[in-house]
Image 1 (cartoon, one colour):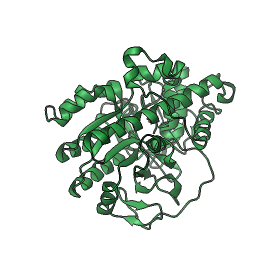
Image 2 (image 1 turned 45 degrees about the horizontal axis):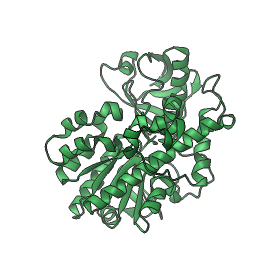
Image 3 (image 1 turned 90 degrees about the horizontal axis):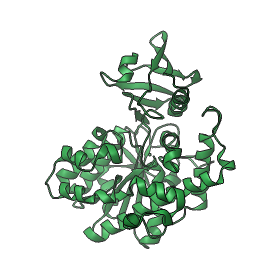
Image 4 (image 1 turned 180 degrees about the horizontal axis):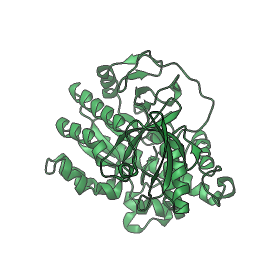
Length: 409
């Protein structure tokens, strides 16, 4: 939950555009952080701690088993992130500490369906249908499959942590008082506000969303206090509700809760962890985040990091990878709009809608512009020694390719 930053009209109506703003920038804002060099020769899927010491999976599992809550961050469309989540779950199980698997992706009102999975009444494929995965989340179920298969093998119970969209809308518009009486049990009794540092970070996300290139007529967040308050209120709702549900799951099962949530709910101890400290004082919390590569990492963001290069699985049908100051096409699914437009694995994306493409954010901005104009998404690629102009129709794709309906990534 995208705020990741998964960021939804109140916020959901602000919606897919701001969600992708958060998701593609992983909810991180520009600030002057302390950085350290990562361990030498770290490979995708491998972990290290905040002191840049390599951390084997067995040691990570032991640390996780000694915590009451493990916050395992993700970018929702990253298959690598989900493979690491499955590996951590399997390693904890091998260490004799089968956790409860807390899911940002599923609202707590779908717990009956999760309990059917927990009882062995439905399999992994049946789970997607039972919780209405496309309706409640929207990111491809296939990238999460390794996690649920690992949970089934381990016998790890699943717990839905989120709130349904209608509650999000109500709170965004009018606070907790606006939640319908029949839904009040699904919302926290009180929303724990964000820390001042997180407020500043979220405000930068909104400022970036309103920066030039996002489309004419976008209101500046600084001039729209109501919009800002809705946005901050909903972020706090998500973090508070997920922490509350995680505390309930720990008390019900008497074991560690392994929480899968977007990076923005995990980094810096601002989101879910801040609320856990209020709701379950003294609880031991371990935070684990993906690191996307580069010259350094920010040790203050988490206790443990694992390497997964930044990728994005677009609903248009291609997988994009951000690396070395650019974006390349890692994979193209047959029969999709991306395939029909002529994209091939290995294409280097040079520009989107005429603007240089140095990161995944450029795809988001270009898709917003194309969607507003009712035009195809124009992409310039380099393939071998040739430069090609490709165009992808966006009709039916939503405001942006891969826009997340829930969650702060």
